[in-house]
Image 1 (tube, rainbow, N blue to C red):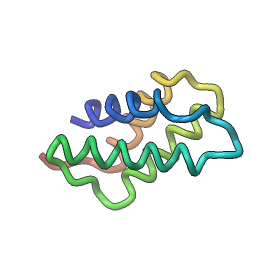
Image 2 (image 1 turned 120 degrees about the vertical axis):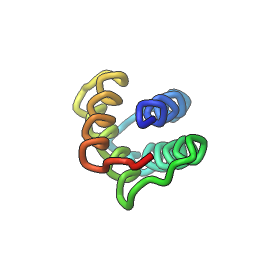
Image 3 (image 1 turned 120 degrees about the horizontal axis):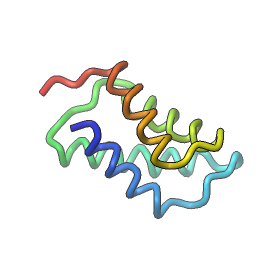
Image 4 (image 1 turned 30 degrees about the horizontal axis):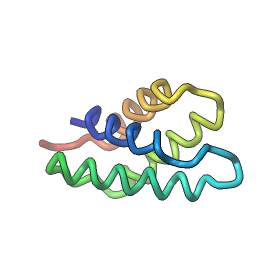
Length: 87
């Protein structure tokens, strides 16, 4: 289920402004909105801090030069390990 959330996040990020060091708060806003919408669509409630962690991870990975898919996979794995979801 978390990979579906990450996919929705990635799709939403594709229409977001270009990532630059000057505007991470704009990107974070898009990311958080997409994350919350994807979780709601999946009928899940994210544990406290999961959305922020996932979006911060994604932004950091991309700023460090990771491809979008690589950043998504890395952050999805890290978030799933740190914030296990109960179905």
